[in-house]
Length: 391
Image (cartoon, rainbow, N blue to C red):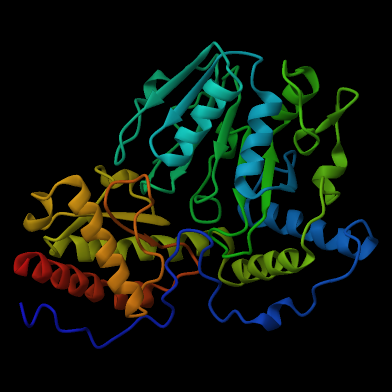
């Protein structure tokens, strides 16, 4: 035990492993924000051009089809998802895929807030995906591409029919810029700035296919629509939203930061480079897990392991025989030790998830920092084990 609890010699250069807001890009400093157009109206020519630049660069890096619209909307990814649900659902039946905290929140919105009668919730426990074969082509479908709180992602979009009648509404906040989204299978895609590119919080991105626009222009929801959700006027799409004319006042400081992140993304090879960086982080943890009996992935199927929100369970024998409350306390102690040592900040599992750790592996995280962190996970586990044995 004495050797096991000896602190590793190497520390991560950047200990920021939070799953949102996430680590800033390598080399980021406050100087990146100096060009920000502060104290200016977002409706003025130059600030509006900056907002349009975020839209145009985002579309280019992601390889979004030219006929899609992309807008900057209020309230981060949550606001973008809510806008889509409240504006487009109700025209036909809907299937909601729920396998972690946020997808369950969307199920709650659809079933308990919008109170749609023809709604099916297809659920799976943490670590698994629902039965995707149950998704019907004649119904709308709402889902996350990557389970931020479970570390379980979709391996592909094969379950969505190219000849579908319904809309595919995808919350991709922890997938965009780190995973290859199947645009031909999607109709609405949302994300936020504070995930894979490490931007500042408060703004959401809402991407619409031509089919989604057609739904907006042909369907009138049965419920009142708050101003910040309204995307049509007189039965027509408000095109300005998708050209930088935001619904509410954006932070030009955050806008400048988003542009900086997109420029960095271009410098590392665009989408392919971003995906490669994130996958390298997952691969480093996978190699380590394969040789360590104390940890495992929460995702049961290797094909569904997230390369961004990498969720780990604790499999040490002393841990598995503990009750749920004791496990939660032990896992929090491990995360606390890592934070106290300054090697991993905000690395605990999400509050609703099974006890364990969650290590962000998005593109702004250096693989060398992941590799430096892993021995510390062993160390923290050994320290908590020694305390449990003594007690």
